[in-house]
Amino acid sequence: MMHQQTTTPTTLPRELESPRAKLVYLYLSTHGTATLAELQEALDMKKLSLYSILRTLSDREYVSRDADRYTVA
Image (cartoon, rainbow, N blue to C red; front, side, top):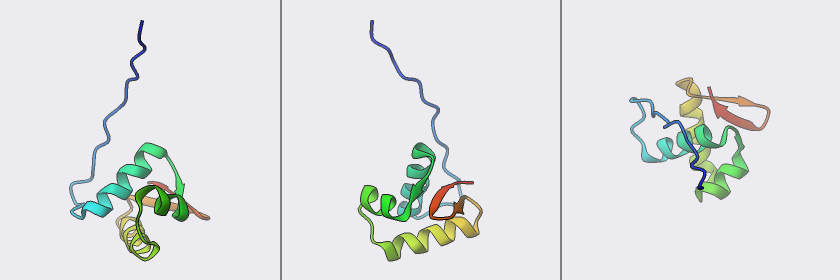
């Protein structure tokens, strides 16, 4: 008998228009928490782009930061 994993679909905030911001938000919502280096490696994005995206997500209170880890707020 196969065990089927049930997952709750992640809802994106409607205000997010940038595909990269959506990608970062989805990654954090499915992985729980990540450092900038983890996001950079997993999403193959440049640090400068990630800083900008994370700042915007943080300003809009979608993402919070605790020390060097980011998580969905």
